[in-house]
Structure formats: C-alpha cells, structure tokens
Image 1 (cartoon, rainbow, N blue to C red):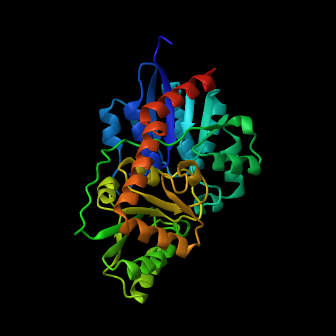
Image 2 (image 1 turned 135 degrees about the horizontal axis):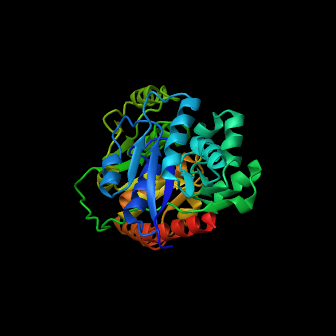
Image 3 (image 1 turned 90 degrees about the vertical axis):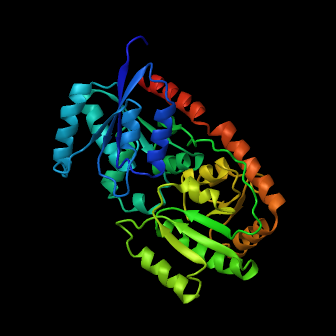
Length: 367
C-alpha cells in the first residue's frame, strides 16, 4: 500500500478511562506508514482527556460540538466530515456509537467495525433500548471484542460468529521492581466507576474481614460516580460509616494516575459481577501487583488461578478475604504471583503486538 489512507474512529469520550487508554496506547505504538487516523469524540470528558496527547502524535481529533446533541444533527455533522475525509474504514470503539458507524458506512459504502468491550450483562448495555442494541450489534460489518466470553455472549444474542473478531487489550509495560516496605500501611485497592456491577459494596465487606486479621491494612476504592447510578457513592459511604471503618476504607474518587495508586498497593482486587477484559487487571500485572478477582467474563482469559493471580466467585467473601490476608502476610508468595502476572502481560498484551493485529484486521476488513 503506497498511499496513506484514512481510518475514522468513533468513541463516546476520550477521557481517562479504559477504552480511551486502549486507543491512546495503540495510536502511540501504531505504524503510521499505511494509515492516517481521525478520532471523532461524541461527548466531552469531565475529568480531563487524552486529546492533546493524540494531537502531539499527529492524529486528528474532532470533538463533536455541543450544538449537535440530537441524533439527526450528529448524523449531519458526521456526514459532512466523513465526506471530506473519505476513509476506507469507520471503526466505532463504543457500543452505543456502532449504530452511527453502520449508518455512515451504508451512506458512503464504507466498511465498518463496531466494538463491544464490556459484558452484555453490564448495566450500560442492559439499559439500552432493544432497537439500539440491535442496530449497534447488527449494522456493522465486523464486531471487535476483547475476550472470548464477550464473543460467546454475542453469539448467544444472535450475532454470527464469522462477524466477530477478538483483539485483546494491551498495557504499557512498567518496571515491576517493587520494593517491600514492612513498615508501610498495607493497601488493598480496587479501581472502577462507582457502579453496582463493580461490586464495591462487596469489596467493603471483604475488607472488613481483612482488617480484622491484618489491622494495619487499608482498602482504597478509586472511581467516580456515573450519571445513571449516582446513588452508589452515598450508599458506599453509609456502608463504611455503619461498620466504623471510615479511617480504614476510603473512597478516593477519580484519580488520573492509576499507576501511581497501584504502585502504593500490596494487592489489587476486582470483584465485579460482570466484565469484559479489564484494563485495571493488566495495569496491576504490569507492575507486579498480585491480583484477586471475580471468576467472571473475560477475567479467566487473563488469570490462571494460583499461578499469576487468584479467581473467586463474586459472592465468595471468605475466599476473597482469606486470599488477600495470605498475600499481605506472605511477601514471597505475593512477589512470585506478581512476577508471573508481569511475565504474562509482557508476552501477550504488549501494545506492539496488539497494534500489529489491529492493522492486520484493517487490511482484512478493507479487502
């Protein structure tokens, strides 16, 4: 391919979240010899974004102006710009926006890729009207997912297997040399938006058990409230106050530098009720932090129980708490598990490896 060709991305936000980090990591690593990338962002991000970083890398970023709030006006804005860019592929990274990609692909006779990056059992997808679910999953030419479990869910929903492609998440590899300080407080953290699906209320119950066995342990909950479940923050605060652990279990809200938080932690916990392929687990592994997580969704794709992490059912308080206590009390075991996690992400979730798979997918879809 001698001439550079255009690829358009659609994404709901370009804030500091999981999917946004994936796009940024891939576009930092991507070979721009073949393709030029144009990112259309549907909504502004309340907690900062990756726009400047993407612009510095030479990519085009278009924040759809607030005056284009309705579906018809957004379609008009997109039609006007897609006509100028003339891309060979429109790639939507947000399930809600797959329908826009499908419609624009039909209008301009362009190949389209949609994405499903979280479980269909998650709150966000469940609350979508059925027609939007249908168009988001059936209008695009290819659906890109990040785990085998989501692929199975889509097949059960009625999507043909031949339209589904798996592209694993990637993570920036950190220095995993983590010095053990026996005098520091032992931090157990969980990261995720404050949603029922993230099971933070369960995390609080688990930490109550952990603190009873390891009094100098603390539990940190990192994540911001979301518009469709704004009550969760108050519920979690009340739960912490009811067990008198407000000095030990803390809601830290949004944090732009989750790697910094993880570096202070002894154990990372993800007790979600459903998941796709969580970036937070990959980030913890990338710096050698042992992971204890729910045996749901795409998490078992990442963790081999007892080898590079630990898996329990999302209602197994005793399993989670005993495992965390053992890791806090055994630095050697914690280090071995953390190192195995690091080796795993270095081999299978390196951005350079995933980026090559993505470009190969683009060539296949184009042809």
